[in-house]
Length: 221
Ligand code: DC
Image (tube, rainbow, N blue to C red; front, top):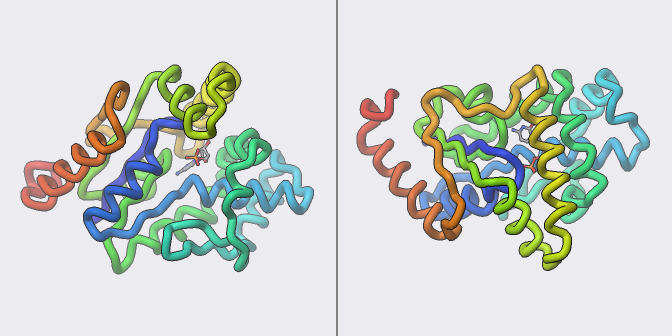
């Protein structure tokens, strides 16, 4: 079974997708981590993140794997926590906008789906990478809620405004790029998570997944 979860930055996709994968015994795939890995490698090696050809070459050259906990490993080196740094977060949307980078990563993302089922999260899971997913979910929350959650997560309640500005900037870049922009697939179920706990969101998704599995026709498959 393939479950595709998309949505804007900070909507809680990773937390929720990881828990859904655990409950359903599926593999968890954080595709944002792959774009972050390429960005981190570029910053490490002084490659210009705006140079499409060089970034494509770099993306093709990296060996990206995931450990048993679903954490990315870049050429044998654990990517956490480096890929979450503010420098990577600031630059990743430029990197993800290069078609050459996406062309290098998308086939790898599809390969991770076989032979096991998968819960994949990102921006283009339902639209581009897994258009035939058994279940597509588009998770959203207001930007204020997303900024508050992120600030609480990193223990910095006074950083809400700064985080909000960064999220808005990234959403704009991700939604307006030409190649595979952040977009709800026509057949995705939209879930607004404002005021919901992660547990409530996970329960909703697990129920949707079970329903999709029991009655694929009803879900348009
Ligand atoms: O989910 P995240 O914040 O870790 O994602 C990091 C960036 O990667 C995000 O700003 C957009 C990009 N991304 C993408 O373009 N396509 C994906 N499938 C996943 C992430």
